[in-house]
Image (tube, rainbow, N blue to C red):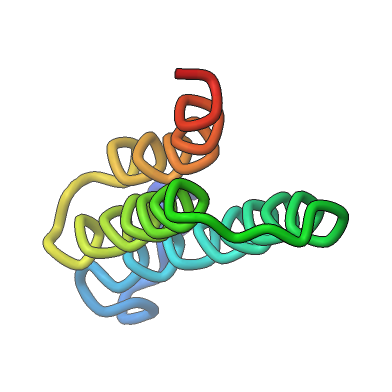
Length: 97
């Protein structure tokens, strides 16, 4: 036994803060693909593109970008992941209210 905590990252493996930023990007990318596929599934049969639909798309992308920006600014990972989780909620709130 080396005396180190087994859950601790190996020394020198990640630069300070790079893990959170990278992890949030790796979670935000599939969420973005999912939300994009939902928009695409809606767009294909209806073949309509109006201002409201554009506003929901832009707001959703802004929320995902905000999560990555918060991670780059050094905010904790749980808060960044909560912001990523809010991206699909933007779509639901946009179409329900």
